[in-house]
Image (tube, rainbow, N blue to C red; front, side, top):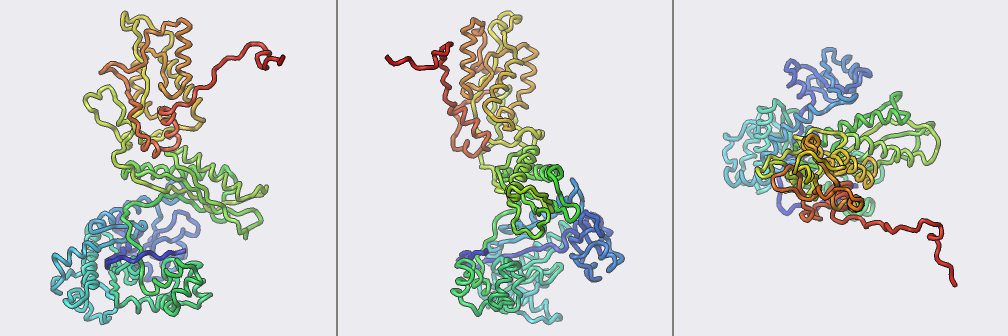
Length: 632
């Protein structure tokens, strides 16, 4: 349910910019021959010519609508050009349109706080820019007003077409206007300038609404399309809302709007003015009642969020009619494809924007066999997101199985899926000062401060988490034996290969199967060094982390007790200048550790606070050793 927000202390200037038939414009830029021609962009499926998702204004003139299928559009407009959305992994690929939208956002964000609401619409808070214009270069000469600004549609002004431009110029330059209208006039000029820039730099046209809040700006941005802008002065708000249908208001298109119509007889927003705030609160609760009372008066405290990037990434697919999925194998096949796309998108977001997603959510629309009208819905399921394609695929399938178990309620019945999607959410910026683990690893040329590769320079390995950011740790390394240093011929009983095998064995005991160890992130940087040591005959008696497993110390102690010549092998710190990776466990910041993914956090905490050493006291070898002595 909607909630009322606190009103701002000072008047604001908010714009909502909406691209005109954006998907069509993107295709027209790719193929200029489509410009001026009736064109529509259709979904990738070929059933009845595909579903129309964008229709050019030329095609609309023939009666073509977005609700049509491609075949029907051809009957209405035989000359229409139908362009199919790009396809990848058996579904629509919208990356082309996302990238084009980003071009527009980059221009719009130059003038104020920018919130990207979707691929083709943006909110702008131009308050500061309008104040600056009003202070430094206020519009005071009608003749100097930008032509595009003079074409604005200002609610409440006479609609005489022949005098419209003259009237608008005069309104924008009124010396007797109040401060709110003066700021609004500056905002209209700024938006007109931005729209001109967008057209010049991207070849895209857009429409806009300019008002004192997001709600009004959104409502009027589409009133005069294409390539126009509409301004809502405070004095015109009540007249505008008086005849606005309830269902046209954001958040009133569903059950709440239907309730207003059925229970209170409200058909327009203006009808809400006849109800007191207390009556609306009594009917819909305190928060929603207050929100309804405010929107009837054009009041909205919702702020523009400074967000150029999406709040989440999602990939979905529908399976209508006979295409419904009816077994786990088909579900897994599609989930794998959806997760592969999702993994690519969050990896790109990490590399380009340094942001990490933390939650993976699965949604599905499922029905039971012979229960088409079942009220119970398939429950959405979430879990912590693990980076890496196969990990996301594995977790998504587990979420589906869990949701299906809850949905069926132990019933042994058939089911079918008509919709499936996966979403990565709770996306946060990587804290400043946090770096890849490789930054803390001292390589062979550490003295010369080598360049540290970032996440974008590391090739993706689906078996690894490529994007873990941690603080320094401590690891023991292997050196040539003393005897080898003396004559270059003698070697220890434990080879480098055996050392690696023992290390892998101990790590596998500590971490369950499928869990990624932080040691894997060092494998790339150390692989060349490890091969060199093998070829040179380097040896190691104790390859593990000094504080990760107590068993390693026991092994070393037992080996020395057996008389093996281990005194020649040193697993401590190597001399300066040697080819060793060096960590310092005392430098680990516990506060940073808490921000790491769970499996990495557990491992590092094991280094800092090693598990208690198990009781190794040996019992006797006879059965009597297991019983207490008899009482006398």
